[in-house]
Length: 321
Image (cartoon, rainbow, N blue to C red; front, side):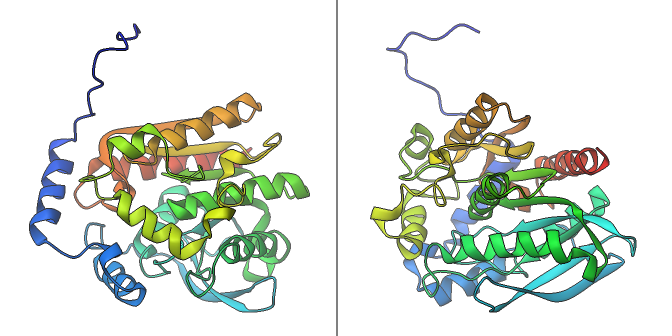
């Protein structure tokens, strides 16, 4: 492919007709953005809207409320999804929401779809949120849950020797950090699933400029989330910005799902490149013409179903190996 001359303007990718229509409808609804709300208001708004664009919650053989101990002993709520009562492999799932909003309810439909499509169990973690629990609490909670599933998964009828970790957006960041930690500590993971993850420290890539406004996840919203979660001086820490990790050798094989019209797309590609340079097998799925959070819009976007199917295939192959 030829490279355009440097003096030629780069064209912004075009939204799909369905994505453009959806964004127009959201704009007409004129709901206040998260950054204009208090944290409790934003959490309530997110719960109210989270599954409006998703298919109905799929019935499964097992949907169970469990608790997983945090490193400090605090019991963390979690939810187990499994399509059968068999001793299944399991993916720890970490929800998105800028480390500040989101919970088990906001990602219930998505977790059901991933379990149903993959044939594996999914355990969604209700990790503690900022600003009540700032960085690195969410990281520590995620690590504790990953270790607990590896060591105690059998106690809830799961195969902790076949373990994956995944998440979307901020949860994708946490999943990436979990995978690096697993490699550092010798905990075997079959796969990491990173859906539109954040990986950089300062939201300073070209895509953050290109898609700063009008593409669902906006620059002011990102700044609002980060300010609640982490001090500016800490943002170079690889546990917040996994692209800064010194060593990703031996990290689990990776499925990365990105949206073309997303402020985070450049850092997702950069992280895929970093992993590949370290010899990590990477399957990169880039969905054209859609925005951040598209994975949770399966009622209206065919790309959401396609992405879920791709993740399910990656999980089946990883757990069968």
